[in-house]
Length: 405
Length: 89
Image 1 (spheres, rainbow over the protein chains, first blue to last red):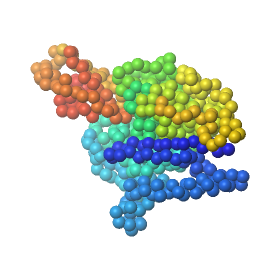
Image 2 (cartoon, each protein chain N blue to C red):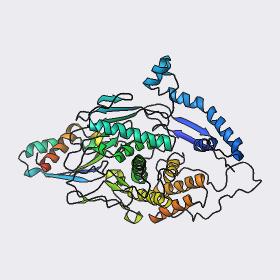
Image 3 (cartoon, rainbow over the protein chains, first blue to last red):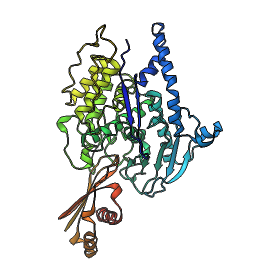
Image 4 (cartoon, each protein chain N blue to C red):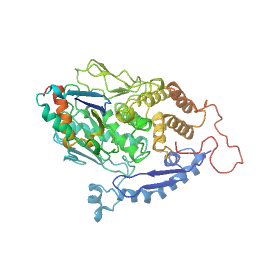
């Protein structure tokens, strides 16, 4: 039985005076899944899903027209760039700040242009492609805004600049100082991390402070790690679960900046000190620095994700990653959601996709319980369906009503 | 008089602190002038950007928190000078 639930997306847009709101009866991912079903018993449902997806095409064309790519307008011969673009085509632009702290810098490569000799440009370019590929091919999200917006990066920002950041429109990478840090494009996880800040901005738009800020950071680490794992073809068991591996020079005692598997163990260096991330709530850090410790306490939800992914096995982006993606894009996360609220939202996402008491639901509960956030998630032993025959059309009772966390 | 600059956040989330004892500096009058001229009471809160640095600057009785985007003009001069003394350049 296919349960019908209402789903609404409200996508805040930057650089625009209006937001984008869309409601559908059946979640798009379910439509796509149904449309692909090859079981004759479900032929009618599959056909209905395909028709529904077809009806949605004009909406997608309308969205795409707002972001025409140079190639689409050229090839279609339509003036004004109103031609439909094909969803899922990556559109990248990399600029070079030339050692200055000015953005965007000089545009050095656009889509369709060949690679040059600049390593940082080439790494950023490939990383943008790998990140776009994860979100499109696994989660069917067309770029960070789901409308095919161009993915933009600037490299060679500043002098000896030991950082990478997301400024609301683009990823920005420093070259490092060569003593402690290498260039920040050297790790694919960093590129995936920065672009995921863009996805978060266009979806839950989590406030970058305190626990919601640490969740924002954790989501970037999670999907940054998934970009790398998928690129390398690593299963959850094979992956290193490190963020920023290779960023430290060989002068530093450390393998990476963070570890999702074992927060607090990524480095231990005489000059830098020890990786300060807590691995569970007993180590939660109260601080006014770092916007309330967003890069510190993110270790807690990071480890929860690692535990869920490894408990489920296989490729982390396929099941655990999908549950986290569903949570991020559910429209039910409040901007200032705390860890407990986020944990509940992942549990609901697991129930919606896999059913209450499912293996996936149990894994999510166990993951959060291990980091001290299992309270309120229940045992997961409720029956799969609380809706008996004859209860009419509507929400299955096992799916808690979405409410802002 | 002591100036303390503490930088937190950034992608790495590593906290770094630099300090300068103004009286021990050869150009202490220039330091005093720079510190007097800083707009200590004119700093307003800004929306943080992901992975950018956060600077906390203390010089009793003053203390301000600046996002990286706010570090320009005399604030940038001060931070560069404090780092320069600590890093020997």
